[in-house]
Length: 107
Ligand SMILES: [Zn+2]
Image 1: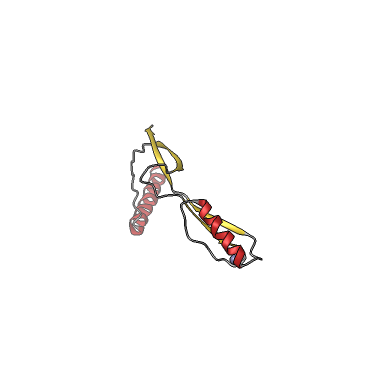
Image 2: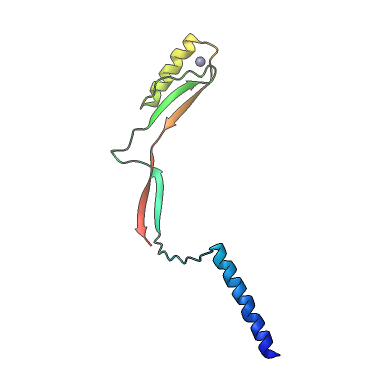
């Protein structure tokens, strides 16, 4: 009685083994070592960083003044645009500012 039961278990195991082989399921164990470090994110203040620029855009007609490194340049363009278009009263300033991650110490 006990031997029959044991034989049954072996056969079941063999069936499961051949099914796995047919399906080509392969288990891969990957080991990786991770090191962590903190990064600080903020405006890029390095001398080589691209300059901060701004451009003024009229919200009424979508026209944009030239891109400038001084925000006041955009204001001058808006004044001239208002003189030519007295009903164009609202503007938006597009500012481009470079950012970068500064790497901290390894942990
Ligand atoms: Zn306009």
